[in-house]
Figure (spheres, rainbow, N blue to C red):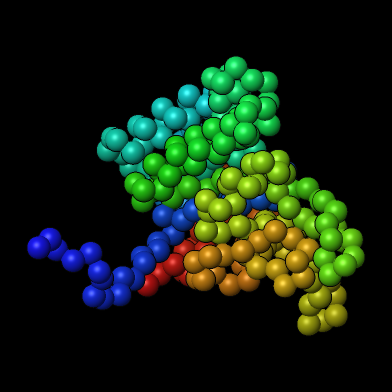
Length: 254
């Protein structure tokens, strides 16, 4: 008789900060990329030409094939990297869509019999990123912020969401464990004055923004340290990025 497949003891899932699956979004220049430079052994898969004022390990992603080859290399070879930051998820999804449409001989993912275009994009984007997830390497998808009108309790409200297309959101959001909004938030101090604080919001009770944490480890919000003054040297950015990384990492410790 073959060995029983029925489990006899509980399995405890292990979560560590480098193995995270995040979607981090916020307004341009709010500091998303700078924050991630504080993560140990992080590599950036860059879809644009930014990073002029940051010292990072970066590889340029010009096509979907570039990304597939990068994931294959990260999974199949030995290296020091623990987290991949995709900047931006919006452009990466578009590159996947373009590649699948070209393969199928169609112009848009909505084309094809029985929704085949959409299905092929979903399968390909999920397949490649799942390879990375199964290697226990962390991944942070970066996106920007937009406002959209939605219905909440029978009234129309404005909700803050990532700039991902509806198609991209339907595919990407189920893949990640955590959605965080990085933003400046105005708060009232004990002295009755108001000040702006840089935070990442992981939970919203008002349903006016997209956020959530499936791991259950993170608080509803984490306050981040910001550089005071206008001088931003490489050393100073690195120092504050590492401080903010520790702010996040403490919640993943066993």
